[in-house]
Image 1 (cartoon, rainbow, N blue to C red):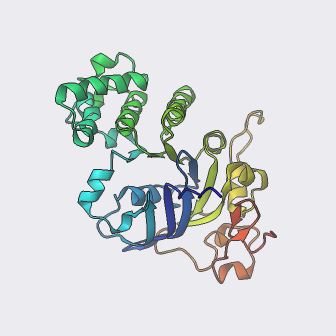
Image 2 (cartoon, rainbow, N blue to C red):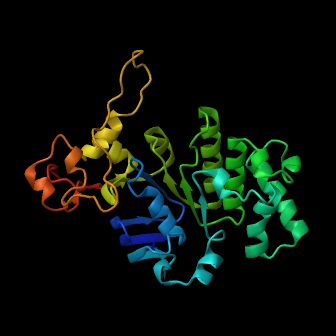
Image 3 (cartoon, rainbow, N blue to C red):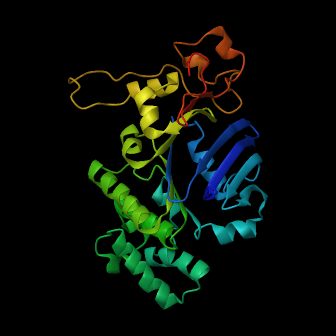
Length: 321
């Protein structure tokens, strides 16, 4: 029997506690080499915080328990020096807002070249040449001239391509993309996602994608995690999750999406209430206060995951396996 290779990334019972309360509570998942995983949920559900935990970029006052094992190494136990050697090399991230991710005081070319100089030891000239090749690879128009431009001189779509070039510079084994198409028009969204998909096909890079867009998830990732108030409420193969929509929160997200063919003036469905703030999450199922199907038992204890088969899990007492 051939041995089963260990996953590239394994997160187990990850809990992040901030002074205001628990921000992540028991998040667990695995991601294989070359595989793709999506995180969906409303703002404030813990998606971006999960990404920051994976990159070692949590606030200094955060307390972390559980494990984040990357290629056999528990990242929660390593030093900042170890993180600096890992970030931008084997682990990379495309941040949600490129204008704040880029340094306004340095040219685009210098910022793309920086990880190549730090992690690959390239000379300034070699790193600049490679930076130009990367900017051309991400289809930045007039890339040679843009090398000496500053971030404020580029459009939002151009800045996003620069951020992607920086993230891909050292051919990372895992790319974390946090809302990489936010504020881009539909055409640019497709181009950015295609760039990431092409790079995955070329290098075998794994992808963790964060997005509010259910359509993006349906076409971009193989596995899906639905998060609410720092808890994973549903997880499984993307096709299985979309086919069954087992958790009431997943159902509500799906119902609220805009759809082609809707009559003009049709109001989209909404989810009443709001995601609880840190320190305000109620006992029991965190979605119970907004759920039309909630029972009194839903408010007593967090439901255990129910296995629906094929790796499809859901935290809901009203679901039959």
